[in-house]
Length: 102
Image 1 (tube, rainbow, N blue to C red):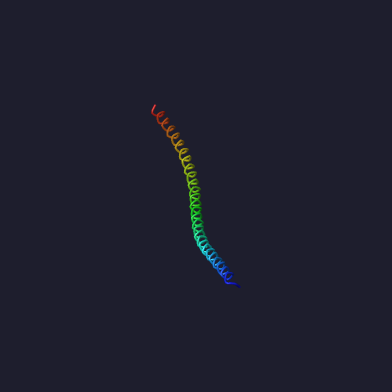
Image 2 (cartoon, rainbow, N blue to C red):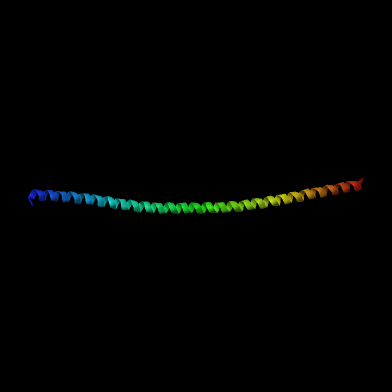
């Protein structure tokens, strides 16, 4: 082969080698980005799970609080009924006492 053909082949080979090196560098950078994104995704998934756990705890507390409120309302109702009965009894005794005095 003439030298000019060899020179052309050598030049083409060098250019292809440079292109391959660029592609290898791009692939390494992309792999690093992928690694960072996977780490970020894992952190996001952990954060999401943490928030779901908080929501679950809050919902559980809310249910417990609702039960407590319901129980307290029942107690208030019962105490109001007792108060009415007591007031009625007191009123009747007061009337009886007034009747006896007269």
